Length: 94
Image (tube, rainbow, N blue to C red):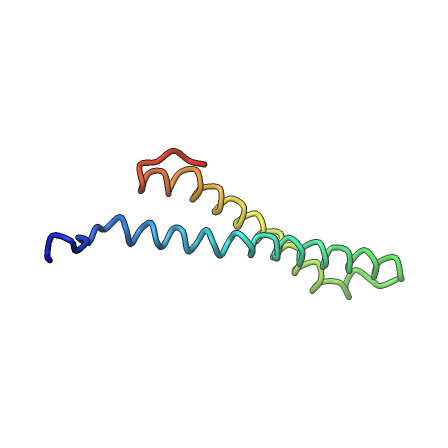
């Protein structure tokens, strides 16, 4: 019976964590992109409507924040897919 039990391998935990992070960023990067574009469009519309630049500090700051989150999401997803998982599993990246 003991022979049929799987032995714990530290790579299993790393692989599970990497796959979980990848799963989160799979949809979160697109949500962040959507929010960045939304805030940017909101700023442009409000400028066209005659808002002062000082009134737009929050939409502009939010655009920059969400753009940063978007870039981080795409970079992290790609790094996990092409570097981290293949190094852990020993399989080529897909």
